[in-house]
Image 1: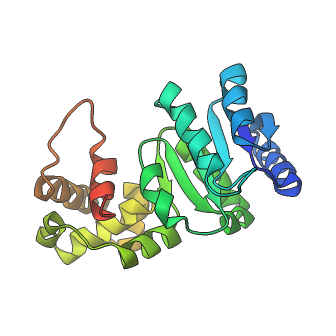
Image 2: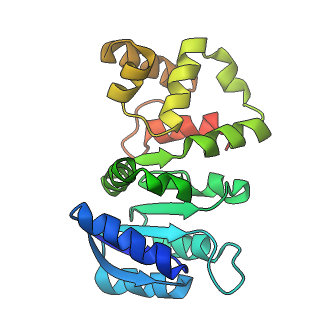
Image 3: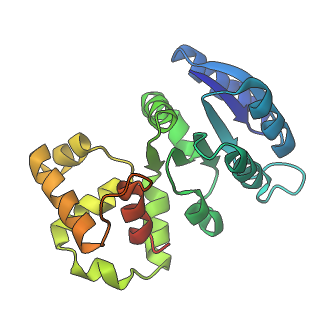
Length: 211
């Protein structure tokens, strides 16, 4: 796997590259600002971008805007966003196919971080549990969610954390078949019918987060 890192902190940038290298992942470019990220993705065509939300010059949303610019050109390009804090203004815009959102403190768990990198690069969605908690504390759940059973809500909450069916089954101490049945019920109650152009799992999570 080949990645581009966009992070203005030299220490964190080099640390991320070292962690990735130890996991057999090649960093083809490590940059410190948004425009450099866009240029690096265009030049190297990597498999994943790891991007800090806040970068120079204003340290507000430059990283996010650069990531969205990259996605405009390459809609399926996987992006893992790292943030020091939960950026509630932006989190909703980041959730989608092949996107991860992690707080930087999660990088300390190297095995979990590398697994997240691989999952996002493969087209998965991984949302930091703390992001989910804070979003839900600020946003009202929509009416469609009222029809879900307590167990379906538990399953959907774990889906929002990026958990696989196997991981959900392990957490809830049920079979994978039971998880699949609950997910099917969630799709039905949220009116998410099969469609080749849609990712129903992501759409369910978006509904759960009040998008």
